[in-house]
Image (cartoon, rainbow, N blue to C red; front, side, top):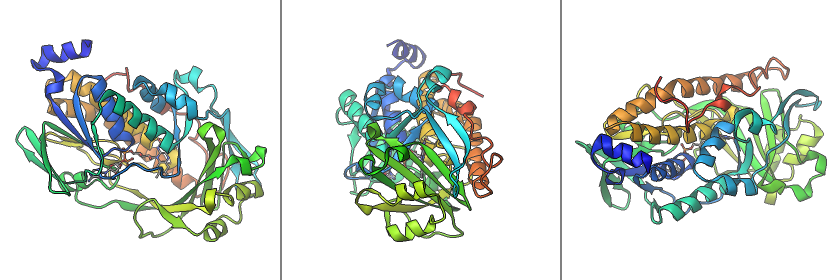
Amino acid sequence: MGRVIAWLARTGSPPENMNIAIVGGGIGGLATALALIQAGFTVTVYERSAELVDQGAGITLAPNATRVLYHLGLGPQLEETSVTPPQTEYRHYRTGAVIMRMMTRNFLQMYGAPYMRLHRWDLQHAMITRLTEVAPGALRLGASVEQVEPRGERVALKFADGGEVTVDVVIAADGIRSAIREALFHPAPPVFAGFVAWRGLVDTAVLPPHLCESAVAFGQGRHINRYLVRRGELLNFIAVAHRDKWEAEGWMIPAPLDEFLAEFASFDEGTRTVISRPVRGQVYKWGLFGRPWLERWSSGRVVLLGDAAHPMLPFLGQGAANALEDAMILTRCLVAESTPERAFALYQQTRAPKVRAATEQAAQRGHRYLGEPNADSLKGNEPGAEYAYDAVAGPLGG
Ligand SMILES: Cc1cc2nc3c(=O)[nH]c(=O)nc-3n(C[C@H](O)[C@H](O)[C@H](O)COP(=O)(O)OP(=O)(O)OC[C@H]3O[C@@H](n4cnc5c(N)ncnc54)[C@H](O)[C@@H]3O)c2cc1C
């Protein structure tokens, strides 16, 4: 309520009079909707998928990410299904020898927010349930935005089915292949980053207990990260290998299991046992892509957020975390400033240095993983300053 009064005093009109469209119902778009609604704004999320489906993958949420999710009221649901491992071991791919340990159970005391491992669907489901509770009808599925047309202080969105809406502000959270970014900001497509990834989920009931753990095995330009999700009922793995080229698009491409296992045949027996038992024998593969750094994330009343603004390689486990931080900071900037344009400038000023550093760090880590597996190649894997970043109450501005 205090925020609404402050907004009224500055702008003379209540925030719900500003009509905001969010394009994309991924982690960034849903978090932005929840944060804006919490601050009193009127929001509609347009998501192109006709239904949101379980994509069979896990996600790591560091304290800087969970801090935002707790603020949005999602803590209790996430606690029901997440796993906080006591530690993650980094091991030599062939011998299994431990090279480094990251202790994670004490992160709540260290950073004021926990470290969580989740099934992506459990996170998405918690966010959608909350959005449906606080703003029934705010999420429109099967709404694919084809065109964005600035019209003075308004913006028109044109949909694939021929429909059109005109709004005050558009937040483009349409992911790494953002069509809005390409239309209004930078016309070039994403660039292949030189890595291919495979993922799968294993029912822990079919694994020996000592393999149901958090561990990363790496060497020979490859690595496999595995961790428990969904109350420990499933183990998620992501395997990455270096490649010179990649042509397929999308991240639901089924991969033949024998081809995948052959790629990682030199790994230690425990790791091979885990990856040989995915649920229904199903493994998916996809190429990792990046984009050049974008100096400006807004144009008039349109602003980019999450992967649409700044995709980063997954080696830091911070892509979704940065989308969640964007959601919180952009909301606070819209509350703090008298016009969307001023808010977007403050948002960019607050976020760009932090996000750029994370993007560069993620790329460097990927390249270090290509080298010999030793303490040197793991430098920088210790918890960093990013875990302490406070998007909820930290300062705005540079
Ligand atoms: C292998 C891998 C592992 C990762 N692991 C982690 C991790 O452990 N921790 C972490 O923090 N991050 C991780 N990430 C990164 C994280 O998944 C992304 O950064 C995050 O999902 C970005 O969220 P987003 O909302 O910006 O984009 P997305 O999640 O891609 O959402 C974009 C949404 O927009 C919709 N959309 C697209 N175009 C249109 C349109 N024209 N009209 C309407 N809707 C549209 C899409 O359907 C989609 O729902 C990982 C990424 C990869 C590839």
